[in-house]
Length: 338
Image (cartoon, rainbow, N blue to C red; front, top):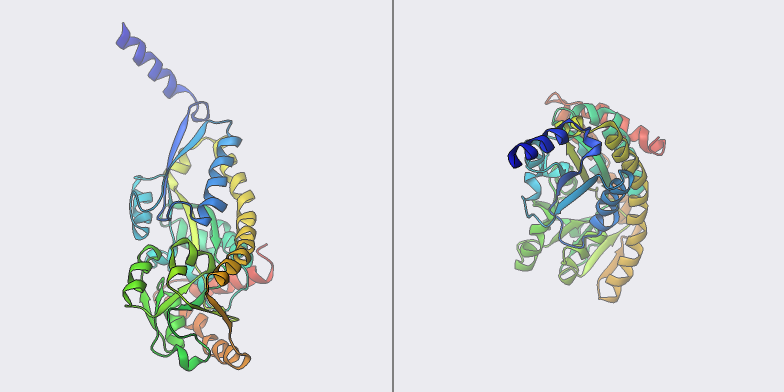
């Protein structure tokens, strides 16, 4: 009789609409505990979804590469090991090469400028159709980081000649093209691996955004940072397995979409604002921020001017719609992401 009762309860649960059941989703990323992007974007989004669904949807969060490394997150999300994963396009550039349109040098000056343009393309435009749909994932939230700078351990960068031969960490793809245009040597690696390489002296420095330097403890190693030139950027994106999304009831989808639309502009604004506080903290700790001389800025910008076209041409030749993605992204930037 007890077995029959259990079966009856199970059958009733399966017959209920999903929104009437408790739904727990697994979320994973490679960020260390307390990372500012988790604090500013992921956790507020998860809390908002739970609130909007009156507690029906909850999340189990696995940070710090507990389930897999950054480069594994696309595969783990696609296979259903996790429902929602942090999928940085640079870490899977063979699968999402067009997304690097938001990581080209000199394209924008703030996180929000880059974020709102990328968000529109990745949700409704070319990137949604050419990158996310074929990979069977759907973008839930994203932040395009403020322009990357050059961080060095020993000597500061003042001229283009100072860049020659410097071994600097990159995320690959567009950032590699950026450094090669300046005769520096790109060393491709995921952010969690940068501390060990830098501390061993196998790199001279990094291409990195301001707040991430602190998040990964790299502020204890670097001594100098450039200012005045955008050396590209990086996309932090959380996406859901498309099959999982398709099975969600409409009210849960609506709650997630509303939470996503709410957090995206707020998160990028918070990232831009947080950078000001972080910079002061780092200056107090002895890190030198060195505005590049006007002549150097002009020379670097001139050298980097062709990186976007070089990037697009290379992908166009492989049958990718890179020139179209670049044109769309530039248009969205000009329109403020609308």
